[in-house]
Image 1 (cartoon, one colour):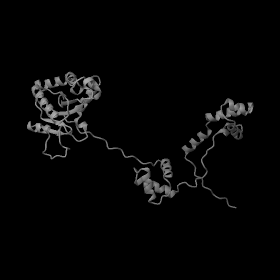
Image 2 (cartoon, one colour):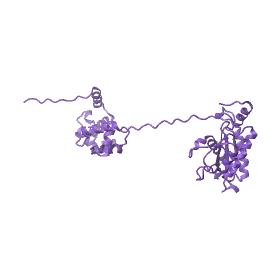
Image 3 (cartoon, helix red, strand yellow):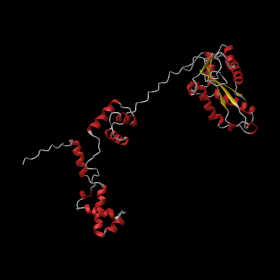
Image 4 (spheres, helix red, strand yellow):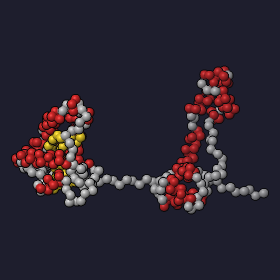
Length: 338
């Protein structure tokens, strides 16, 4: 009778070495079991279970396997000997080809595409195959945000940002409790010099009054305003009020009469009015968080003190010079901090 020739595929050398090291290594669990079984053979199973804090069934199971060598105490593999429902070579090839054509498709989308080509397995089965083969979806990187170059102003009044801040209700105490006060803020983008004013209402009329007072104040300092930048609030514009484009608000008409351009930022983008928004955040930290106001006149007086401190405080964007000093240096010598 002729002997049947059987071809055996030998594992890779490195894999064989790793396997042999794993088989020859003695783990702490094996040493524990050996010590446990020797103690049970000498003093009994019950005493061994109490001393080693385990149960007798565990000891009996390992006693049946123990042949006197520590290698018999090694855990056996629980992997099944055969997989009757494993993916066929054709299915694995289909998955690989589809993944090559759809590298970023999610699990469910990828499963649907496979089903359209005759794939009959479940989503969980597909997930296990993808995870085991390292072919999970490759998430495309988000495009890197490249900010636009920051626009630097070259002289005072080239552009002034204006915004309104609601005074926190927690700051209003006594007779002022329950009322609403507003802080109107204008900041010169070149020097960071601010002009603040308190109002009891937030309206187009208040905005126009603030604009007139601000222009007079800056004129006394020695410079005029060329452009005013605001958000799209109703106190500044009728842009989203449903009116005709030529139907200007009182604030816009005041700007037009003085030949000052009005720049509106993109809707819902307060960062475009960043300088005035940042100054309002500083107001919250250093003014409103520590002050209380008993009346509108009290609020006006404390706001004036806060404004004076702000304009005379050194700032890093100005090379550690105060806004007032920066403005004075430019107006006297024409020197900038850039």
